[in-house]
Image (tube, rainbow over all chains, first blue to last red; front, side, top):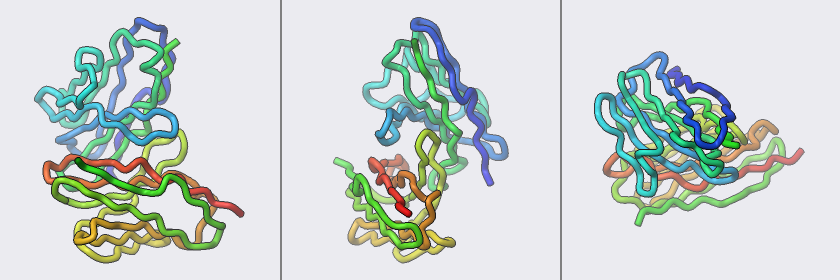
Length: 115
Length: 109
């Protein structure tokens, strides 16, 4: 089945530094990739939608200058958390699909801890 | 506005059957998904319904009634490993996924 690889699985960084998270579709071309964050005991919150070769669409309340998304190819999207702060500590999950009404395939998630 | 409702938490016994309901009000409908999410892990796909009726896949079945804005996920022969959160999500007319808050299922021996 379709596989989405997300890296790293967990990262600890100091406040003020930047962290890059990669999301790769391994056996299909992901026309659309989604980035979510999830706080403990809460549901997924969509942060942004990215389509290959175009700018990401950010959800209301998500700072696009803080959460930089690049979808440079049909198999790779990256999320960079810039100038991270402790409140950015969360579980970040990417997902991808090759067409609009097909199931999302999720990466394994990245647990970010900012100290 | 768009809304998806599902129970916050359910408890069931190992070997039994449990039904998790999901009701939705969305701008259009292009399908409903069920995902399973274990604590600390990403969701995994369980089922997709776009037409009315029951879809059976092993121990799991999913039902949809578009006229009622209603779906359920049925889990049979419950196993301890089925303890997880179950997320209902609807694809609206803009092909945006609207997520429910999830139902935490607790399985007791």
